Every structure is written in structure tokens, then in C-alpha cells.
Image (cartoon, rainbow, N blue to C red):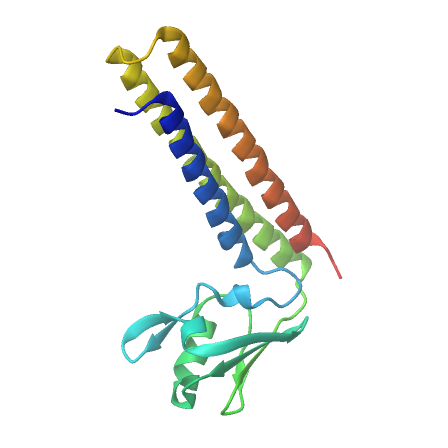
Length: 188
């Protein structure tokens, strides 16, 4: 049997995961400076299986406008370069036979707005995920009340606490998204 406290703890844990996932998703959205996290979603066809790029090469950002990718197996340089091109990151990789260099061009105004719009979409997906966690928690609390396992006032308090938790995580999500948007729109 679950208690209201257990339901709240579970909801908090799930909301924390949503926040962490948002941080990971935002790391892959480009800002004006180079970051190896830009390549986090790139999958390379490594001997027939899609493999994350960081598992087939060393990634490095030696300067603010450049990412270098050094494959562990130089025969994989062409598939890695192809995967980066196909990832729709707005970059143009080039290789010298040993290493792939990815110059990160400064963002123009139009691309900044496009990335900000993408960020808003990602943030909204995560807001919906938090609302879904709230809904699940509220349904679990209602079920306890319906089965007469908790009193009416505990039912009400459980719903109030769930709403407070939801509001707190919404603020955290919005704050993280605003910070990232500021980074994207900032012109260096």
C-alpha cells in the first residue's frame, strides 16, 4: 500500500528526472561558442550499428569556435563526418585524414531565433512531462481516497502538496530555459 508521502516522493523524483532531461536536451542546442555537447545526439554507423559519436572518437573544443573529433579508428573518419553532416547542426565538418575539424560559425540573427524557437519547443515538452507527473500523482491520491485508505483532509493536502511541487519545478524549468535562451541570443 502506498501512502501520500510515498506518492509525493515518487512525483518529486520523476520531476527531478524531467529537469535533468531538459538540461541534457538544452546542452545539444547550439549557442555561439563551441561545445562538445553539440554532438551528443550524433549517431555514427559503426560497423552496422548506430553508435554515439563519443564512443568512437575523442571530442575536444580547443577554442571557442572549433570542435575537433579524433576517431580511434581512422578508417571510420568518413562515416563520422557523414553522421555529423546528416545531424542538421548547421556546421560544415572537414577532415585531414586523421582528425575532423568542425568550425562553429557565429550565429546570425535568423539562426538565433530559430534555435530559440526550438528551445521553447523542448521546454514545453518538459513542462508537459511535469504536468503528466502531477496528473499521475493526483490520480494515485484520488484512488487512495476512493478506496477509503486516507481521510478527506489528507486527500486535499496531498493534492495541494503535489500542486506546490509542480509549481516549483515549472519555475525551475522556466529559469533553465530563460538562461539558455539568453545564451543563444547573446551576441559575442
